[in-house]
Amino acid sequence: MTQTAHWFFWLFVILYFLHLAIETGLDVLNLNYLKKHRDKIPELFQNVFSFEEYQKSIEYTQTKLRFHWIQQAFSVVVIWLMILGQFFGWMDRFVANYLPEGTLIHQIAYPLAIAVVFYLLSLPFNIYFQFVIEERFGFNKTTAKTYITDQIKTILISLALGIPLLAILFKLVESLGSYWWIAGWGVVLLFQLFFTALFPVIFVPLFYKLTPLSEGVLKERLIELAKKLKFRMSGIYTIDSSKRSTHSNAFFAGIGKAKRIVLFDTLVNNLTISEIVCVIGHEMGHNKLHHVLKNLLLGAVTSFVGFFILSKVLMWPPFFNAFGISNPSAHTGLVLFALFSGVFTFPLNPLMKWLSRKYEYESDQFSAKVTCEPQCMTSSLVKLSKDNLANLTPHPWYSFYHYSHPTTTERAEALKSVANSLH
Image (cartoon, rainbow, N blue to C red; front, side):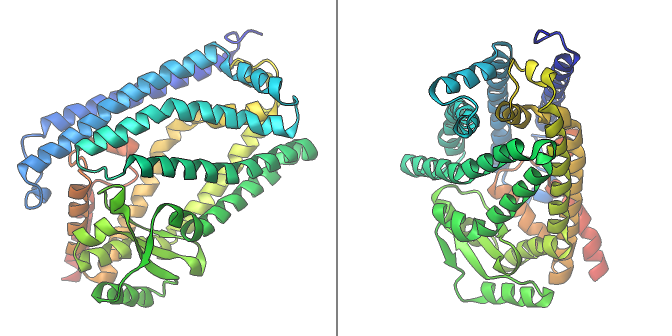
C-alpha cells in the first residue's frame, strides 16, 4: 500500500492542518484583541505600568507572535518535506550503513540522529530569539560563552539520561514481547522520579550558582510559614538567574524532605518581603493541596495509556507507511510516536490547561489565606506581569486554549473574595 493510500495518513493530514488552523486563528484573534486594547492600560495595572511600559509589553507580545509564525511556517514545510520525502525511512537506512543493522547500537543511534537534525534546525531560531528578541526588550543577559556552555551541558545530560533509557526500552521490546510496554512504562516513571529527585541537587547547580538565602527577615518569615504549614524542605536558596535573564520566577524542586525553595535573584530584588512570602505560599499551596501528587498520578495514567497505544502502533504497518517507512521497527516507531502523537491528542490540551488554571486559583487563595495578605498576592502578580512584559489583555479564547495560568486580572478578581472573607 502506498504512503497516501491508507485512511490513517489522511486522518493525520486532516488533524495536523486542523490543529494548525485553530492555533493560527487564535493567534490572529489575540493579535487583533491586543490592538483593540492598546490605547488604555487596564485598571489593575495603571499604578504600576507607565503608558510606555504598557506599549512595550504589547510590542513584546506582537514580536513573539510574529516570530512564532515564521518558526511555525518553517516547521510545517520541513515536516512535510520529511514525511513526503520519506526522510525517516532514509535516515534509518543511512544509520544502518555505518552500524550493524538491527543491533542495539543501531536502535539507539537512530533517535539520536533524528534528535540532532531537529536540534540543528531549531538552533538558529533559538539563537535569534535569545540574542535578538530578548536582547531588544532588555531581558537577555546571557553571553555567547554562557549560551554555548549551557548547550553543551544540556546535550551531555540528555545523552547521559537518554542513552540508558533507550537501551532499556529496546531491550524490553526484544525480551518481553507484547507485554514490554507495561515494564517500559514503569521504567520511564522511575526515570522521571529519579530526575525530579536529583534536579535540585545535581542538575540546577550545573547551570546556576545556588546560594543559601542569607539570614534576615525574609528567611525568618519563610521558615515561619513552612513551620506553620508543616512543610518539609531541605533549605531555601537563591540562584544567579540575572546572569542569563531579567525574567523573574521562583519554584520548588525535589521530592519529600529533599525539596528546596529556589528564588530567582531577580525576584528577590523586585518584590517586597511580603510579596515574596505570598509567592512562596502559593508554591507551598500546590504541595499542601496535593496538586503535585495529582499531577504525578495524572501523568502516570496518561503515560500508561500512551505506552499501550505505542505498543499497538508498533505492530501496525499503516502507521509506519504513513510516514514513509517501509520496514517497521521499534526504534523508528518510537521516534514517529514521539514526534506526531501530539497531532491526535491536541483536543485534550484545553482540558489540561483548564485543570492547571484551577490549581493556580486554589493555590492563590491558599496563599492569601495562610498569609492573611491577599493584596500582597495580587501586587506580586502585577509586578511579575510588569517584570516579564506579560500580555495584559489576551483574547479569552486564546488564554482558554493556551494558558496554564489564569490571567493576572482573573487571578486578582478571584482574590477579592478572599480579601472580603478576611474583613
